[in-house]
Length: 187
Image (cartoon, rainbow, N blue to C red; front, side, top):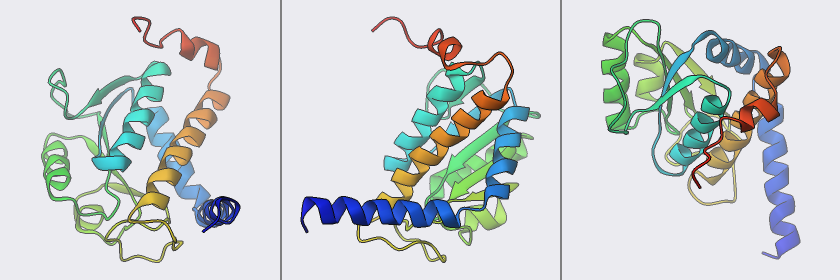
């Protein structure tokens, strides 16, 4: 496939995902993120990388953010939120983490390309469906010519960035300039 044909197909897939994405569900997710000051996040692989980028931006916004796998992550509990990205909705060790966090009283929000997956159906308190082709997914999503879960992973990064931009736009006194003041300064 030639370069132009490839990027045109990718852009077409993005457009389809963003047009199919339920804006009311995105709004509900945004409201929960805004409501919670202490947020824990988890994800693996490439979708985990997109989720870590989201975690970084939430920290830049002034939220108390913890990545589940970090050694310095404190206990989770009542009033906390866990955002778990599970492309196919049923990654075993992430499901286990969600179950433990739910037992501790945290709100479990699963972001997935497959809401029929076990964790999304049976553990999550809330689910945000990003309707993009995902590795091992079985739900009605935008198909992709790209391998495995590329489309989901790419769209996840963009959707998370759109969420951050929306929150900044809606929060009096919060600006990208203020966020940059929280950027790591020991590079």
